[in-house]
Structures are given as structure tokens and as C-alpha cells.
Length: 173
Image 1 (cartoon, rainbow, N blue to C red):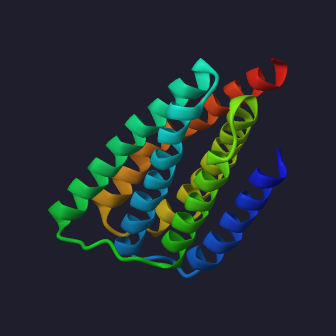
Image 2: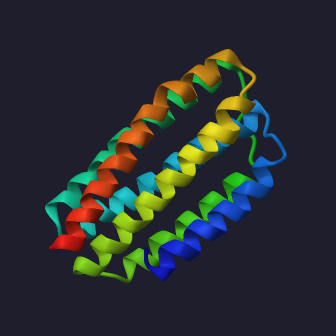
Image 3: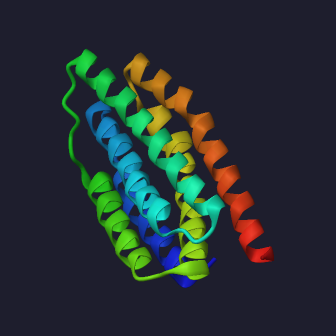
């Protein structure tokens, strides 16, 4: 894993870990979910446009499509439940780190962009899965919110697996 990905993952884990240790409420969890998805949508759009590999461009497009769908489900649920997503330290850190990642990726091109994007996607999806398993799913108090988090978890696992496959292929080629 390159230094950029290692630093981004470490800062995300440290920032999120401190905030998640406070057991976010459902409104905060909703905001974290929407923010985490938007971070991946933004990076995915960049990968669609800048990826040099067809696999990277297709993966970026898939991230935009899948994470947009999750956000639509989350927003529909909070509207139904009349819950206003609540900003919090974790969401702010996710947004800041996501913007930093996109800015760094925007400066890259070709194979360097592809590797950095995919390395980040591997690290990011692993962190999101850890957050889902250790904090967000167990912390959700509303049954429908918890059910949504449980329902979308397999997609995050599939994204991580797919990113790892692309990562391995990029290392070979």
C-alpha cells in the first residue's frame, strides 16, 4: 500500500475511531452513512473520468451507481422516519479525508492514478466494513436503520473483493 493510502487510512481510522467510541445516535449514523457514500461517489466519478484502465473506469462507475443507490435508500428512510441526519466529527473527518483523497488523485494520471485509486478503495472499504460491524450496525437503535445497514453490508464486501481483484491485476500488469 502506498504512503498516501496508508496515511489516509490511518487518519480516517483515528478520526473515526475517536468519534465512533462515543456511540453515535441514529441521526449521526444516518449522516455518517450518507457522507461515507458521497466520499466514494466523488472518488468514483474521478475514476470514471481519469482511469487509464477499463477495469478502473468501470469500477469507478459501479461505485457511483451503487453508493448513489445506498444514499437514496438512506435518505428515503430518514425522510420516512422524520429523522434529520446530524452532522458529527466522524462525518466531518470522512468528508475532509475524502476531499483530500480526490485532490491528491486529481494530480495523478495513468497507471499511478489507477494504483492510487484502487489502493484507496481497498483501504476505504475495509474501514467502512469495520465501522459497520463494530459501531454502526450495533449502535443503530431504530430497527429499520439497522436493517438497511445490514442489507447494504454485502455490497461493501463485494466492493472490497472487487477492488482487491483489480489491485492484484494492476500489480501484475
